[in-house]
Length: 76
Image 1 (cartoon, rainbow, N blue to C red):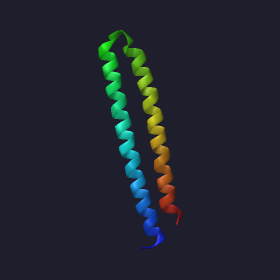
Image 2: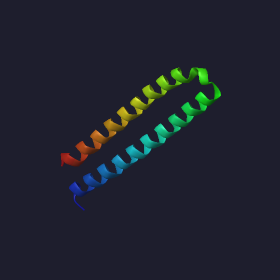
Image 3: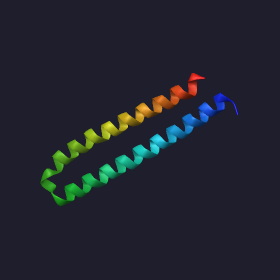
């Protein structure tokens, strides 16, 4: 197996793990936000704002991981 093939394999595995992690993180975030809104409807706006900020940070980290995977795949 060549180093190019290993780089593609590592990039594919890394990208998959990044997407799975982001999906799980955003799913947990949305579930917690919905539960918080159900318990205290008056705080819905504040909960939504905090949720959107956290979702943006999760997406930013995922995008960074995917860029690293692309760089890893195209470096060789």
